[in-house]
Image 1 (cartoon, rainbow, N blue to C red):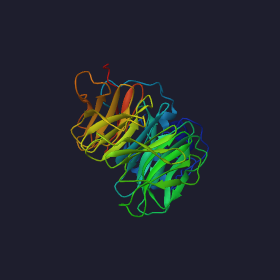
Image 2 (image 1 turned 135 degrees about the horizontal axis):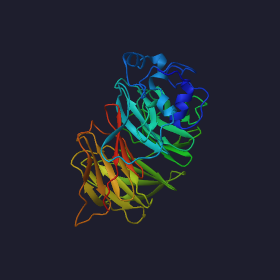
Image 3 (image 1 turned 90 degrees about the vertical axis):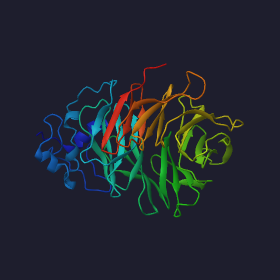
Length: 384
């Protein structure tokens, strides 16, 4: 086994230099340590397995020794479904984000805690923890300086979202807090936009934001129920049952609805903007995916296509909207432009997956999280 400073390993997985860390909500990362994790260079052995479960060795358990060996970081296009990263004894995968040549994701262990991880997108090396012992982390986002994640603790009046700088020179930071529980989080510019519930889970949700560097959660209570959200320049969009509401950003004033008719007959479960930023896409609980232009006078949705089970999350590029379904164990691609009359037919790009949840896409591949501790990927469809 190799010996390597833990801080150096984490730095290389995040892509930048690091000088010392402390794990948020868990034991401190050791400044130095023996690589006791699963080392891609020599495979897993009994010592690795024992060490990888030790809380005090959490940094070592995810050694980036082989990431540190600077394996080729060039992007690759996966011809078949490929495991990009696998966390030992990993929990249920949740949100996922891509930045540069890294993939970041959250998982939950089923006991109310979880972790946020980082790995190379090309599948080389091993994942390392960005933060451990997090209260049910869900959404993940990343920019040029930091990684952000939402948490859903069992108690109210706690932190809504955390961040960690990519330089690794500082411990995790609570971006904003308040008497709420985060249900959705997205990154827009220099703000984290958050949809949260209050003390009463049945009450209307709260929509708000805070600077990514930390600060007050500025919010309003919206109509509900609302569990999906997207943000663009000047506006934030929130599901309102089977409708889509719009709010000015950052004033949070109510704007004309994006959709009030033909928006679907079931609650909206996720939404995203299309690649042009001029249309909103959303999925409903019955598997339908709709689109509507961000034109204030339009207020009507158009059916893009349907998958045959409840969707979890959406991602998109300029040609497809990608949908995970935990119930069906599938990842599907719906063409944004139908090649025939009527709605588009889904293209299955992965089947038999273990309850896929979060999803993200770049120019080469579609990535998603599973509930077995794996991040999987496959090349984007090569169709028109």
